[in-house]
Image (cartoon, rainbow, N blue to C red; front, side, top):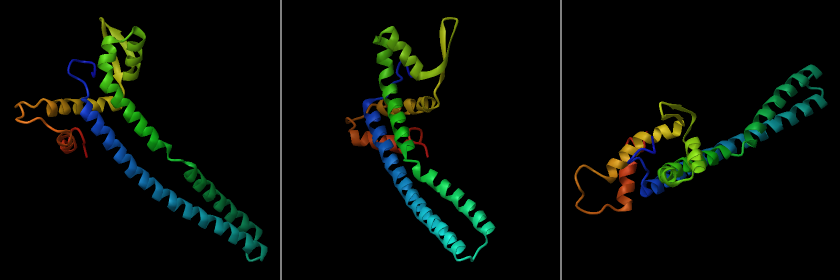
Length: 189
């Protein structure tokens, strides 16, 4: 797929895409921070409820059975909140690292495959996907889902860089970024 002639990621697109991913990561991090703040408030409220049922039992305002029932309910809620708060947000970092790895792969795989050692070629094929099968001297690979999404984007980027009609002036990096951002195939949704 990406190793076919003409299927590469231009450096300018790679730089823009990494900026876009980082910007999306910042937005997601803001949402995560808000969620964590809300979870912390909810956790403090749960601790206050636990303290209150202890006081109520000590003052004999509730029975031992009511205390046990409420205690189990509140401890279950406390553990749920602790699990949510212990999630340190690594999923956003992992997503960005994986996206960057995919774009780096897409940018360098063709040259690495053409000039690389047999071991390097094997690693590139393994990074490309799974379930490698050889039929009639043709290699079949199940491409990883994120790389499948790059196929239409790669075609759209190629069209941006090599339009049907030649441009009168050389296009700047800022203009390229605008074209990438406004293309619904490159940046869906």
